[in-house]
Structures are given as structure tokens and as C-alpha cells.
Length: 166
Image (tube, rainbow, N blue to C red; front, side, top):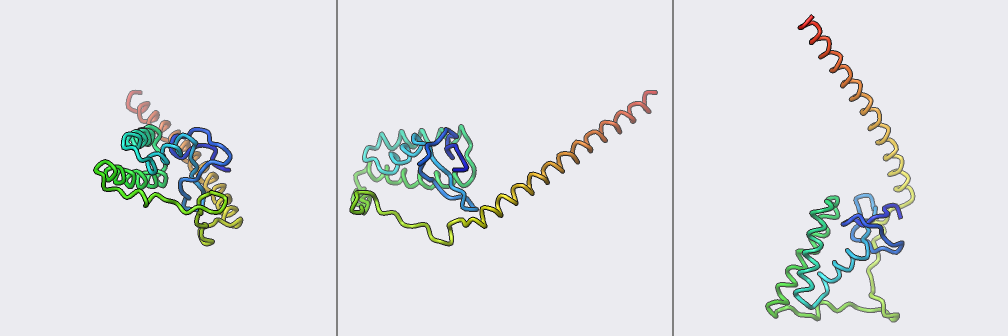
């Protein structure tokens, strides 16, 4: 597991942490147990007060920890759906049969497989690693260029001040 922190609150995660969403290169965004529980409560609870409390807590975390844009969009979509569900529960128009999940013979929910084209291959991971190394080298080079420019500006300004006053 590459990312050892929660995508929402940056807390440490367990080895079997749930995945919130997959990144652009197939990198998963993991959740800590607390955030996963709050998302479950927001999307599956039958109590309006519990849903509202979970949504408020997640909203506060999103503001406090400023997650990346993919995490933000995923949580925003989930919370919008949870809000709509909560409003329907509050006015009594929600159909709870929509929440029923098909279970396998072992009692676990049946999950759809991730399509093969969305799975990241070893070649993709290696390419990502190489691109990351190249980007770090470029960043280092441009940092040196910026330092050199800064020193040049300071020397030039010093020379100008020297010529003006001496």
C-alpha cells in the first residue's frame, strides 16, 4: 500500500483499508476506519440525525484537511447523494428497499469487478515511477536555476545600490 494515510483526514490507515476512489493512474485513495464509518453512516443509516452528524463531520474534515481534487469530488458526490436520501427519509418518501444489497452465499455483498482496462498493470506502475523520478530531477534543476536567479538579482541590486550611493 503506497499511501499510508486516509485520503480525507490523513490519519494512519489499516492494511485492509477500504478504497474511496481510484486516481488518474489507478492509484487508490484509501480511507481510515473512522472516515469509512462516517461515509457508511451518511449513506446507509435510517436515522436523519445520524446522517446529518456524519455529513457534518465529513464536511468539517474536508475543510480542515484539504484533500486532493479527486478525493474532494468523490466525497462531494457521495454527500450530495446522502443529503438527498436524508431529505427523503425526513419527509417519509424514501424507499428503503433501494438500500438492499445482494449477498453472496457467504453473507458478503457481491461486488462488481474492476474492469480490466481500469486496472493498473506493472508496466504502468513502472512508467509512473520513472516519470516521478524524472519530475523530481526537473524540479531539482529548476530549484537550482531559481536560486541562481535569486543570487543574481541580489548581486545586481547590491551593485545598483553601491553605484547610487558611492
